[in-house]
Image (cartoon, rainbow over all chains, first blue to last red; front, top):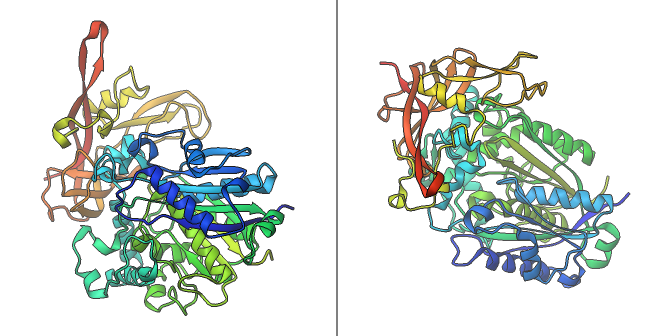
Length: 389
Length: 160
């Protein structure tokens, strides 16, 4: 059986950047290679590029060969782009995992990135509906924030979740992101400020929402025997993964408070990894909005349904709690370039499991990443481990 | 209703938030033709009876192509209201009022409510289909002519 490991990772600085998409990919590629002296661009046999906005914002398709040329990579096993909106990066990791596992490729870089503030700063408002069912939900004036506002309102009504509990997610993740030199926001936010911030869409306020972000990230996956050759760090395995979708247009969403596709993806990923939810030591979840992190605690099985609000309030998602979540600041602090987010999450989990994270979860052996995408209509879960069993 | 409004309409036509609707571009053009008659319709499979939304050209359950057009309710009741104050998509002006609407148990629609002031719409209110014209789309015709194809779209409005 071929086992798959992550052996290097790095990112560009994220934020409102004065740089082109290809500048950002170069920065991320260099940061990735610089993170591991034992591997170079000449050792990569495959490249998967993840980007959702490239066609729209940079008018650039056929992106993977361009990134390969700029990073000095000459792919000979795979060279293609994948897209799954906000989960594009995780989709790339899953594809690379499958190709390595099956013997098609040995050492693959997954590089994700976006330049979203083009051709003008409001581009994200223009192109947001493109990740929904554009002809129906998009034409209705729907972007992403109202979907999560609806989920929040329903969750509050059904389970008594409060605006304060949602704000606590923002407070935690902003605190976690303070020492992340490449994140978009590095300033903490206190509870009062979060609760009194400008409303975006009720009940979500400014700090409940992740920003629009330019940025890139890159990670290298390798088959185990080559991983041993190309790193002197502890090996981190990809133990299991899954993606699920159960309806795309909002009118076909069975429930706004229980995300069935997330439960399915989690169940499959846990089964593949041969673990239970309670085995997870550290997790990076898709906190595009604070309510999303709360629902993810529940549907990933970290707590019972409806208890996500209490989970954050009781500190169970913080350092020292049951399972520290979004230890590098998550989307709320780091920002969210859709193609790069899943890769950033994978890099943070790799560091946590190796023991060299900026803010370390002591003794972490099993880590998890979760991405959602579109109208909450697809979910991706990847389980990483220091051990294979 | 505004379609391509930003930058004085000079931004690329791909900013257009509304779909192409005429028979040249779309096999489900009857939906829009029915909409002009203030009917809210979709397709149902003649083979297995599955009613889809949005309308289709194949049945996603049994893959039959034998579909028929059926009417959906044009009145519904508001389950949840949320008002969006900033960051709305291109071609729309804030505030946008979105409501989860129960269309007589047949469909739970997350739709926009228009002709309604902030704070006016409440849970339990009755709403009805509202059809309006949107920006026509320019289409190349023969001999260099450009014709403007008329289009419509829909939202909901409060029954007063």
